[in-house]
Length: 236
Image 1 (cartoon, helix red, strand yellow):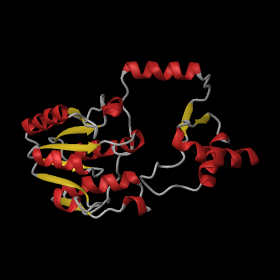
Image 2 (cartoon, rainbow, N blue to C red):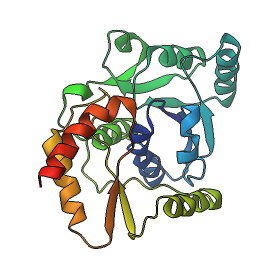
Image 3 (cartoon, helix red, strand yellow):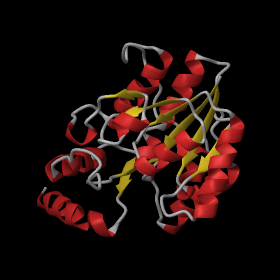
Image 4 (cartoon, rainbow, N blue to C red):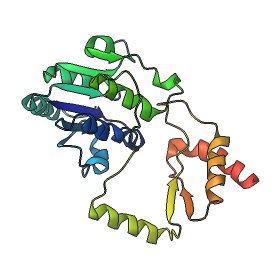
């Protein structure tokens, strides 16, 4: 059986989707799993041993590129697709690609028509962790009633080149700690946001553990969160 798993948004969201690949493969070792991700996210999954193939999609793709992707997916004769995040344009493409079983969250009006194996999920208002939401969708595909097993944790399988980049990063930023934690305040609107006090609390706790260090990327949309967190960190 061949299944396509799609997650085409941010890197962090894809990272929390990676356990789905191992979970599916552990449950059905003969399953052939392909991933469809954003072009910028390919390095996160390109060395994943649970994947047979990797495809890319962007909502800003040209008509020719979308037609090529549709033809390619149709030629693979996928038995099912699991959309870990619903995108109407992508769901329409999967239907045009003749993928008969389409799983995913019934989160938009159109999803009720384009996903014939949907599940009710209101992720932006749910207290359930994003990774658990993804695994529940995989469980529906497998016929599981819910997360009653020990699910795998997010694991990245790095290429030698990626490991070299990590060493270069450590050298450039003079990172001496054994473990680095990247603090990422805010979700960009894709889920419930933690209060800045909690992010600052995590950072304060990490600084008290020997061998741990933390960094935070300064993305434009993230700056208000970082400024609020830093005020709390400075005050402590």
